[in-house]
Image (cartoon, rainbow, N blue to C red):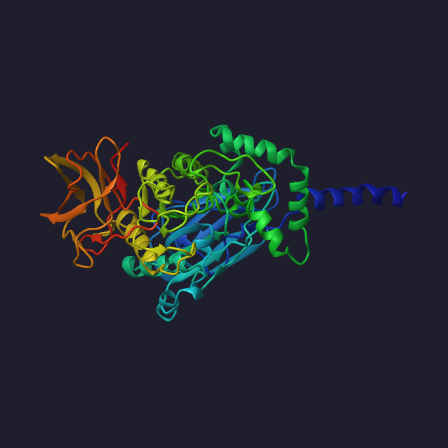
Length: 505
């Protein structure tokens, strides 16, 4: 008789353990000692506990309560917080009590992308030299991994150290100095990952090409099995598997971005595009040789990027979430079709077209593009001159998200006047228009209706640039810095470079 009574009890215990109805109170992994909370906006805090349990979150003078749902999930929102460099405790109470200590309030940014975002501080001496002077910077570095399903927890923890990424640390350092506010960086990056790797699955509803990619991915049992095996390898995967994993669609987003939402943040810095710059247009068919290049091409990238930004804002439930795009810098190689190019010529299949696509992000509100046209390397896809990149990102963030009175951009094309055989170019942000080497402006090409492009003779006159070429009697069009690795020298009084542009649409 006693034995028969024990069996149902044992079954009930197994049921409770298996289905989570005995969950202990646990905030999401993002909420841990040393974290930084975003200032001046509502701050979601969430986690799990037993079903139908009252949860109370206390931070500063705020006390917010809620009740877990039938699955044991809970979520509250703190009212907007003021910046604080003084570490405080957050107390979360339910069936138990959890203290999260040394919590700062300031500016939180996600820094994401591929290898040039992952590029180490140790590879850039100028940035590494900043480490002893860094203060009030915290980092949550997301472990590089994939998932076939959307994960709920990000693998990582907050640390009181600078980000390992050169660009992310440089950005944080100068933003903390300009804004005089703590900075929290959530670093989630992985080399050679495409934008498709960072896409939510449901973007296939708006992008037929992505639906085709995902349909094929679903049918590819071998790939899915290989991913599962790598994910579950006890001692981690090897480099070959690492490359294979990060070059798959959607699965990087599932593991490394989805779990971050809706952690309150000011915005996202995106340094990516090299992987999508292999083809000028279209999505190549998969072959054994190019299995990892089935991604959208350069000319379509800009429209995809805009949809991606809007979808992320939806995920974060923040239509004002700021996006700062890092323009691809100078590089002397071309596309798959024409890898060997004249890196100064504006007609080649170069990264100039990708930069034009990236600039389409500016068609959305609360976006900026950090201009890097004067940086980069003729032969190295991972240039080391990243010091100005972080500075420029910080200036953009300071101006557009902290409302600081700073000059954050170089000259931007405004309009062109045609007078006889000359073109007069007008710019925004043109105060103190000059060249940084006291020579005539370089990087300008002009053409008539034949589109036979010729290098222009350029002269600065009253904060405009006047262009001509004796062989072109009726010039109509301009391409500026529209080449793989152009020679440029046009800046404003803040020493910030002019943005590339073309007028021959």
